[in-house]
Amino acid sequence: MYIKLRVITNAKKEKIEKISEDHFEIWVKEKAERNMANRRVIEIMKEYFNTGKIKIISGHHSPSKIISAGD
Image (cartoon, rainbow, N blue to C red):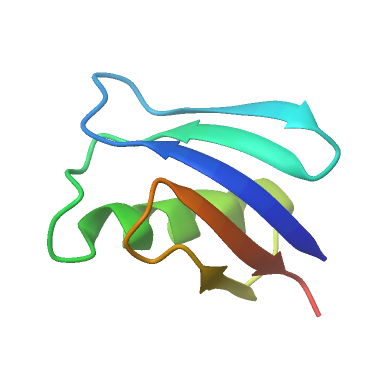
């Protein structure tokens, strides 16, 4: 399943908001440097979907990302 993400970095509080079935907004405390925010996004989405298979498909250097969740 492909999911669209809008990532807000350097937030005071981490949260995730479901916009639609395949679109989420996610706030992370990490800065968008040295891949720190991307790693945190993957951790949060693994917990949310309860799976170990989360991969960023596109948007590695952008706040708008597409991830693959599950099989």
